[in-house]
Length: 191
Length: 367
Ligand code: SF4
Image (tube, rainbow over all chains, first blue to last red; front, side, top):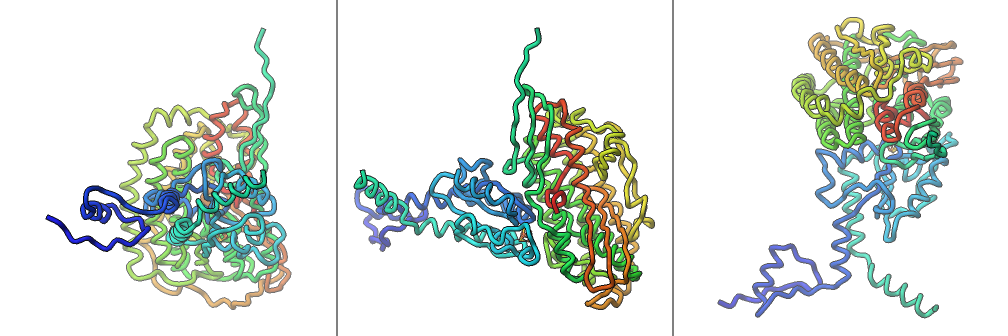
């Protein structure tokens, strides 16, 4: 029995049950059309692996977010202990001038593409340690570029999750492949 | 002829999954044996003592939460307001004293739970972490409904507490006590009788009593070495002299003893909370204290038992509305220096277990 062809928006990743409907509706086979880049981005956004790097109090809320009640694993967010395996660094807590070069080096050790989340007001701007203070860095963005700022003192685990979801949105929209191709082309012309 | 190997310097941290923050340890190894350990601290130095000189006595309550040991914000607030109250001879209403004691003991449980979870991770038992966090979330809920904050509360005030407990809070706290005592045997099943856990902790990292005293260790670390000393008994504050509780003491001084002491302390904390809830009087929660409080000229030393040990504040006032000088005696700092003694001669794999067992918080070490 022929079914009515359904309206399928172009270049969109469908949820599985919807996708199955479409496949049935297509005459003679199953084809989903999308862009390679979007599939790639969809996969990347669903597996953000942050580096476990707790600096201060915010790290405790970060631990809570990984643990029982909030369970970030369900969003594909799995902590990694080494920068070589991570693609996102959550700067959780205040950074001192002594630790700043180490944060920078960790960031440099991470493979591209990489992202930075600044968690808490200390990492964002120095927070309560902004005035009369000689040892705290006034914002981690002085040493590494930040993608998402999560405000709070400390941010609740929910806030951190929101920040990570925002990061996922950002990853989904990125011209990831195009940028890569452009870079390769530029390198080829130079050579 | 014995085989001679060259000594190797190994750098652990500051980014290491089991340094519990930003501690760097320079470990000298002979083969697999630890010859020497030099902790390198200061990665989280937040110049709190200096900042406190520029803030009023009231503002400083918010600062000690963050700037000192962030796992036990209530204990920091307690030692700060205690110092101010002693210097200014400020009365605290009965009800506030009881509320403070309840909060302090809840904080002790939550801090020990974090320790238990991370110690479990260090030794490869991930379940302990998830379970400990589950219980901790319940304490966070209690804190949040009473104080409005999960981690940093700013709840204690000089001369009392900020607000009265919300309706039904005592019942929920009672409920939590029952729930928690139910859960504690689970940890026994998970860790206490676990042969891998025993092999990694029993007899490992022994700290003899005389070394513990010489190094100024305090809290559960010293009590696991046989020092029966607890500030709550020796110099009682709040209502600790009126409640009954025991101080767990072990004589072995190894990682396992430190684990058992902390586990038993959590049980005793529940006991204290229950007694306080039972006797909680009605009445005022705060005595009248000016916002721009000026303490008389003088100096004072206040000490309390934080979850990590003997926490003290030395406060000097010159009569102004802000302190002249504040010195914080941090328990984790002294405990960290007992580390070298504990680690010498053990294998490199034990370094993690020993470091995990002393429960340092880098914010407390560096301040
Ligand atoms: S923002 Fe607040 S909770 Fe986070 S590190 Fe700074 S002081 Fe601590």
